[in-house]
Length: 411
Image (cartoon, rainbow, N blue to C red):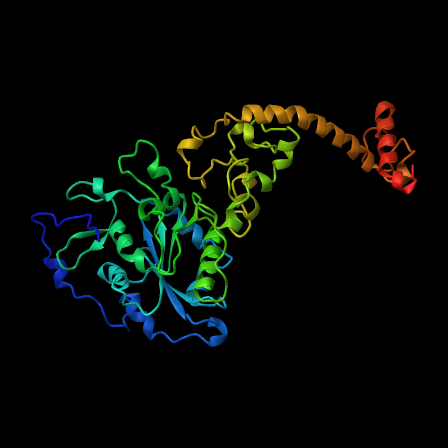
């Protein structure tokens, strides 16, 4: 297994050696891997499967912690329900997270060491947040992302080394967020770190202990419910209560990332009719302002960002393509109209303009009840002008109605 760091010459290690590791399972600051076996088991009505619990190692690379914030807002299921084991059929989750864990320092990394040595009492999953930075270009004694020290000699252990140690024995490895999936912003052209996604580092031939390739849940940040829903599906499979869900050729949950943003965008109807926003705050389609929604695969327009609310286009923002492998380089400059929009929007202005006017004609007719058909005025006191169609418009309505009701013999 690769070691990406060396002991710095002249460094002292006595202070770390002098501090004993907390191993009392009754001590709340001891590693959760030692405390967890002492916890009472759940009732069979809740567990419903062979696994009573599973460990989840949330390891961070080059990240802004936005994915951690995103999952904290998940509601289907909620993180607290996973941690307390309240979801029937799912094993209780023992979370090992740099921010949310109770233990810290050597006690925290002891959980990773026990997992790497196969000494846990339950299977474990790896959730990786952030890009992987290439530690082979970090210098002789340098490192990009450190995560604890080797208690034997004080050598800094990197996040990447822990991934290499833990990945072969993991039940599943999930890349959380675009940085973890494809490299994201830290992997943009010209970066000095040779940043990449988990899939790039582990390779296409990687398989977890259960035979699964890397699972990718992209987004910057991803929808929290996408994370917990995929995790729940994987846990049901792990528990033997459901088949393995469908993933696409990039390892994304197929039921979440097959459709484009545009197909479920609340502004898509304006695109079809060739009506586009001129500035932010307008209600029409945002493609002319730089929106990439027609080609980007993401479900945020229909699902929202937190509990069905919010989301880019729902709140007036454009889609910048943050779930796609080509982000950010292939979607820059951001906030400028995509080159392809010149053809598509102008085509839609012509065709959509004609369709829009035809629909307006039909709408005018359908806005009048049969009782008002021959009346020039509406019986509404709110009417400010005559709405009875005349001339060519009236003729079109008659021909349309005759065709519509031709099989009924109506007029």
